[in-house]
Image (tube, rainbow, N blue to C red; front, side):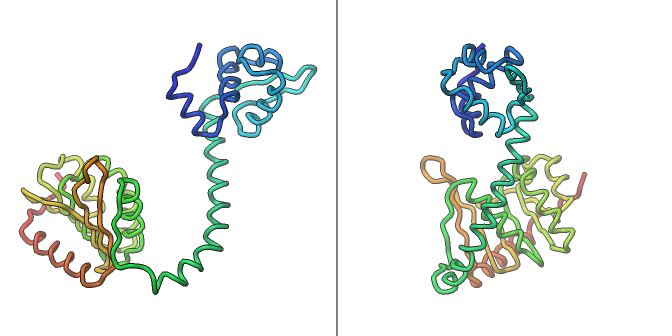
Amino acid sequence: MSIGEKTRRALQDLGLTEYETRAYVALLQRGSMTASKISEMAPVPYSKIYEVLGSLERKGWIEIESGRPSKYYPRSPLDALEATRLRRDRFLRDSETQILGELTPIFEKRESRERPDIWIVRGEFNIMSKIRETVEKSTKEILVAVPEFTREMLDLVSPTFLHLRSRGVKVQLMTSENVEQETLNEACRFAEVKVRGQMFGGGIVSDVQEVMILLEEEEGGTALAIWSDHAGLARFAKNYFEYLWRDASDYKNA
């Protein structure tokens, strides 16, 4: 039985080579086997099979029973993925320590004289990362205006906003009255919520120090936003938010 191309690519994205993928799938399908049998069934060249199986063991995808000859067993996909996640987390922590320790002082030394007041941020992932970075630094208040506050957005921001609220940070959320009631009810756990009939564009203001303005997608579907720590722009964004907030309707958790 062969596996789908998407699953094959996913395994490769996790660090398995083509030969490692073949060997692991063969073990899943047929159970424990010797190296020579795996080489035959996978198929993997016999000259490569011990290197392949050793790599799979180190990565946490298979186990070895010593003997004459040794036998190889597949770990469950769930256990193998957990081992991969733990290995990647450890690698990421070690890399972060090394990178931040050496490069952050260089960045901070130059940032004060070279960092611009305004950045253009493209792509949904980059925008969400910048939003998270912005709000996590908040100590007083966060003002959020989004025309469509979706369930996906709620799931993404809830942990951060709940943590901020526990620290005493005030969160105000303004969105469209067309948003699902269940989503609005959940948002009331971490924010004071108001709704409006019409909203054009959106953004986030943090402590009247940083602002993220969400724009319409560029041609081709790329999400676009403007981030700034310009004090004047942040004050203007706060004033405009408060102007819209005054006319919005209070939402009470149903």
